[in-house]
Image (cartoon, rainbow, N blue to C red; front, side, top):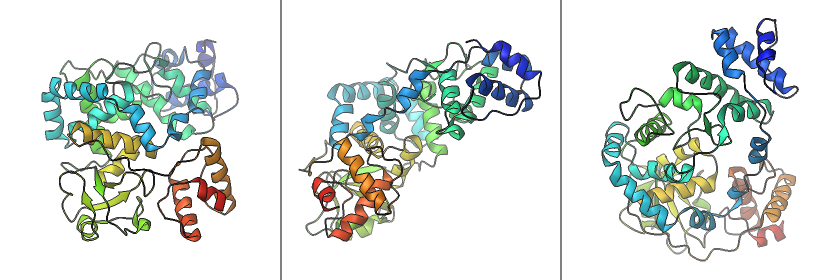
Length: 388
């Protein structure tokens, strides 16, 4: 249903600002009213919202993120292929001057941007075909996370006023991200860079624009120039697994004194704070995470995505394939939900019962492992589920 008549009526009336839920057309009316009240031109606002429609496929995608239920080894093997690695290396050469500029101006290593570029859109090959305005309005109308998506709608309106967004034709991911490295409208407004010098910020068509914009955003999120982010390590016999996890941090020199060593190369400077991570428990691979690793969570909050993107970035910088070890089998999605229910019943805050091993579930698993005398490595196993 086209909403232009509704919007026109709304703008001529004293309508309350938009609240999530309820009538979708009324919600769009409220957004238009807010935009005009904030000083945007009435006719421009009418044109911007004229074709806005609710997209059921967006809601379906939002509720079906099962890929993040995969454990690190399976997830990383699924996302990292020899072909993807080789194409990353080819793009590093092709855009060598752009990456030199990025490293000079923003301090972000090329492997980091290449990994995001690969995972988000397969180096620009598939950037999503959801209408971006419809996706944003649909998600803002849905009451799960309206505060996340409402500001993006008004940012898209500003981009429209600048000539950098077309509400009818701009497409991207189901969650409203646009371009080769998938940035939300507000991030584009604040960090968009014209990397190819054509006078426009074109994140869908221009790799220099997309890469420089992504680097600027990472810098704004706290990326520390010239510092590492992740490194595979070998842990000594008798290591205390309870010292692992992002909540446990100490200077690199202290880890080295405990016998932690790099599997390849050398550990970072001794005073740098770091955490030891076991993405699949004490029998699986081990990594040391530096402060820049935490910036990844500002890009994507999924632990398995962050681990895999950070690891792939090291591969693109020349690191070897990790040693997978022989981890205990993980839990199936249904078992993970059962575990989360048991943890919640014991008073732990695991967040949503979704079968995903997030930060809350990891913390609860560690607490129960300590209580039960199991290795405190945050990896949920059938033994833990049975003991609970």
